[in-house]
Image (cartoon, rainbow, N blue to C red; front, side, top):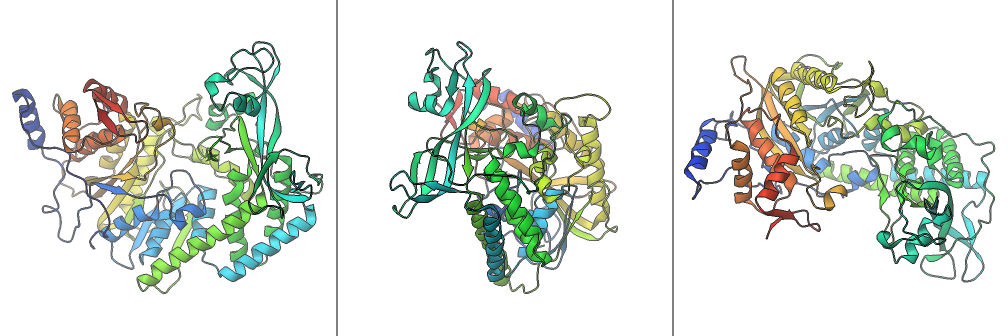
Length: 618
């Protein structure tokens, strides 16, 4: 196997020295170390290159930015593992393929890839990432599609410039919900009320009765446009101005667009309170104007004769849908993008010029193509990517025994995210939908025979790992990305790994460089903001992989030892540091919840810097 590529930062090992610890803790530490665990690189098979304890990557390269997908792992995080565990020409499998980043990473470093997922959107995105098209022809095709849509609808974004009175081009409009005041029943325009409070939510008051106002429990009455941003020949920069009526009437007559129901059986229906807000279909999330433009663009794309060009144009089209919708959040300082993990519409949101968004994604798709091509060329790779992405379930792979050299995969994290629910937003426009009942997730709500339970999730994960074991060549390796705040979910994966016939050899923290918004508050909200990549090999038949209980006091000592190595970590790092060591040593992780780690840290006098998310001890 090849060495890990340069540029990765190796962190210190989990357990430090005994120092001046009390005798009881010293005894437990010795017991922990004597219990054994993961082999060191010296003990491992010849040619194995030990990966670092942590990999930090940025989610900002051209490939990553070309198309959004939930919990996407950057190619810069996947490629080092592929190069560490395989030789050029090897076949890499990802049976939870998602947006196809494993396939892209494999192609960029000269490997072949087999990718499987039940996700229709995932296959669409992953296949088009490696659909490398001629840049000039692609731009020309996009120009034709836009021109034909404009000809069909007219200048739908034309508006009057408030400075010169001449027609200008609308770049975006800011919309605000209007609420009913719970005190007097009067209307509250959220944007205007927020502005009057000097952008302080806690100071917002009803303009009619002057009582304190909050959206929680307040009824939405309607939504109104409040601010336009216009491009006009009279100014070199974009101009913000009060909303004015558009110059062109919008009509949906003769246009075909998807209006797919978001059923009450979907987890996101209740989590996003869609019934209460009347958001029952995918079309309800678009303004009438943007729905018209999207419908016209989609129709013109469908008419492109060249299949590869048509598919790539649809890739750019689906990439703009979230931002083209009401889910694109406004903020006084900067846009906050769309909340991709739910169907949330903020009290103030954007209606963006769809043509501008589409043209930007055409450029983004070509930048992604260039990065893939350039990386391949730098390694002397001349052929087109050999990536085969098919719709298929991870627990029933259509691959022969012993046909795969290495597996890198990123399964759903229990009940963290419901991919098929959110993918419906784009799949409605693709024209095919994921069978969401088959998804490997754990439902948060609901009951009955169709409820997707933790037991069902464990069966699917175990079955998929057994399938990976079957298709791997003798001595093959598997790397699995996982993260969860619950020890129960980690224990579930731990059991599935053992039952499938793998033995854990390496656990690497994956830091993608951005913490969740919820994690910004104090750091003790029990949100894990980094992942673990568990690398494992086929166990020998005589290996004992049975789980053992951890010694008494191991958790507290593990926390202290992690902090001894680096006290500027985040709570997530400390939690996963403890999880990692337990997994390595085959100790049962069931009781290791991040809430308990957070309480232990607070008991030791630690707080969290809200700006950095790092621990601080005063």
